[in-house]
Image (cartoon, rainbow, N blue to C red; front, top):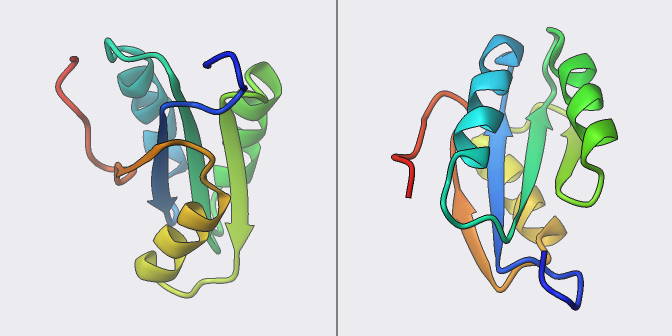
Length: 103
C-alpha cells in the first residue's frame, strides 16, 4: 500500500454463494505483479460459508482485504457497494468465478 495508506487500485469482487472459489480468487489477486491494491469482497447475501472464509482472510490482512455483507440485491448493487467502499485511485472489477492473467 502506498505511503498515504490509499492503494493504487481497489479491486471489487461481488460474490454470492461462492465460498469454495474465494481461496483461488485471493491467490490469483496475490499473484499479480502490481501489489498496491485493496480487495473488497461484497457478499450479496450468501447462505454458504462465504462469511467464515472471508473472516480468515480479513483477519490475516485487514489493511488489504475487506469484506462487506449486504442483503441479496444483485451483482450491480454489490458492485456499487464496493465502489462506495473503495479507497484506491482506480477501481477494477473481478468476479468471484473469474481470474486474471498474472501481470
